[in-house]
Length: 347
Image (cartoon, rainbow, N blue to C red):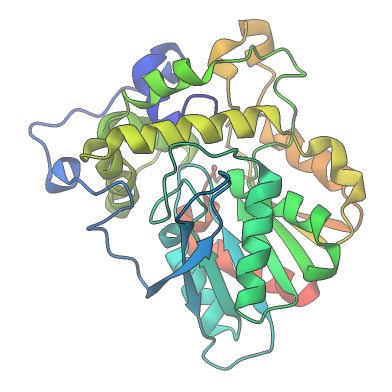
């Protein structure tokens, strides 16, 4: 979600975490010690994963890339499909509760892991762009026989979902943005650029504690529940495993994509009915740690960003959660899913 992963910020930039003390542990828990492969080998997803083959961008490449995804049938189908797009520090599995709510309500759900993330391929060389990831996602939907779908994006997935809706308006029945990043153009506001090499160095310092500290502050409004540890361990385990450098490198590459490819300037071109779901205690702002204080203090104000986005996007409706943070679907699943299902019906 930033030019240096939020996972690493608590370690590399302690000033950003001022006011939030790092968790103290008498000894490492099982979650903290857990390691996973570079494609999350060893971490079980809540539903069966399948593989969709993506062409390698390199000329003459003998083997393509693999895009992992879940395709979950509805209990009593209503004829609609929802595509769930994860954030930069998330995976398809993080949508577990949302998948259950949607399928119980009659929706078929497709939840991919984008190339470079989670159970999908981690290429050494790849020109990451939201256009490319949107095209990969569209190809997956076509392969599954889906012509039109509701596209839901969280965090970085909100930027991707917006790009998908802009590229494929005829295939986007409804657009849902859950605390998306990219509601402001950080570089235009004065956040300095960071090289990929520097981002990679920061990613390599990611730990269980740095992830937990960051998530507690931004994702969960300063609170913490034991069930959140699962998602911390998921991310930390990949960095801690033998393929940690491979994971960190892909995270650095995608950080550059997030910073240099804003979608906010094109909100007026979105044609799909749009539902904005905003946890208002969120202050996520990629690169704010690199900006001067007078600039950093103005960034990531979701109390205003959600309203501004709702005004900029035609046919948009805003749902605000005053006491929730960056991940309302995990922090308060019952409230969030009730609002989501109501919004899907209206859409």
